[in-house]
Length: 323
Image 1 (tube, rainbow, N blue to C red):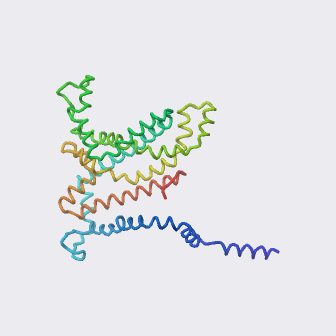
Image 2: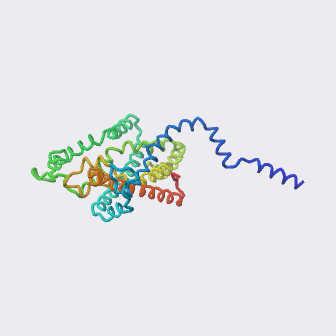
């Protein structure tokens, strides 16, 4: 009897599909989704992976007129120059500072706005607020930078209000974009104004999936609005917050280009110039393509490392993770 049971068990185990068979079975079952993803995979390969061949330029003294075999290989010289150059260290500081400010302000303000919008009882007022906060996202940075420059100019509305309120005297107007140390704050505030409405979309969608009965039970137990937000809403969207935080940490080296390029000037260049502008000015404009590729390569490698670290930290603390 026992031998029959053992034989039956072994036969069932042998008939159980392996991981590879299971993979191909799911592939066949989801063939329509696979076919739909083929154009994206082709685009990803052509525009994201094939250009990685160009990273070899960072280890050469690249000359456009020469073929690949005729290029002079210089090893790590470009990277040694970058890390010994005071300008690059300065723009690295600026890049991390501006990205960190945008990350913190963007997350905090978007979550707070989503929580407040969720508590609005008037549907019409809620839609009006959403529309007003979404609109700046659809402005290009050229237009947005023009608005910021006009607002902060010596004859802009901020100086007019300061004069009216008596904080400054007429003739002593402040040129805000001419104060180097204020640039990071101005850029952070401008980015929040432009993107806060768009960033709340994901959080509002996540809040909509929370079971309304939890709010009803909490209200019956005497919990106020702030307690319901703290104990129900925030835990309900925690996984979404963690995933978005991980993805944004991976983009810490991507502080932007258009905003810094348009709002920057000779007076605030020590705080407005980031890696992208450095690559443009000292790499592409001076035909030093190897230096430009080295700067871009450094950004990509650091971004990957930050993404992996953030993902592993989230995994260690039992939170959601990207991969």
